[in-house]
Length: 118
Length: 199
Image (cartoon, rainbow over all chains, first blue to last red; front, side, top):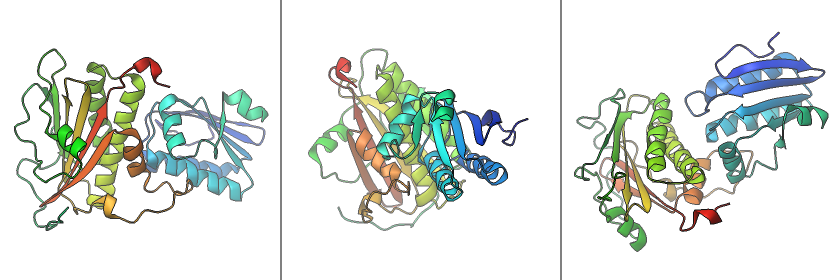
């Protein structure tokens, strides 16, 4: 059963213990970042995971509005005692994370398996 | 730089939304909406450099569209395609694309206050013997120069203002040229002299 609301932005999502794993797809910018925000915040509110693992293998581009969504999601998760992991981060997305100095704030993992075992 | 009257005229003939698509042409820069003085010699040289003429990569891109966020991606991709055709490496293409994205988003959010039906215009062209790409973004919005705003200490947990940080760190030159009825942003990205040295 999909844990995140069906959307073009989410290819799949599942529960793994107290973790929520979601694969995100597409370029995220000011146009669709509000939808991205709604999806993530609703998923947190509904499932309250200890770990949110976002597989970004199919996200070739993300702008600062997408980053703002990730930051807000992380802050909400922290209040619930949870953490957010980003996996399979593509070069362009890694670049903006570095510019924003968020590459050391988010937990970046090579893949979902690594994130789930951390 | 002398500040000019702002908000005098918000509509521009030929700039009525919606998206009118994009054109690639090898025409000269005949209607470049750039008339303000520049205080940086290097930027002035780049801004005034004639478009690259010989060879197949002489295409010039000009797009006019509305300030709808849905137009960011197609505009960005068109500029990226021009940069790719001109031989910029993948890293530079991504940096150019991100800057176009952030600059457009800033116009939509700040110059137009989120309104989605306002005019915007982008040009991109090769300059300096095709060793650099010049991108301009014109708006007819508030005319506020973001570089005049007070600098805030960087806080990773507040990504607001990141767009300007991207422009400053990823482009070789940027200039906000205040216009009588809005703003013209000029960005220049140069090809690395030795791409093998790129990290």
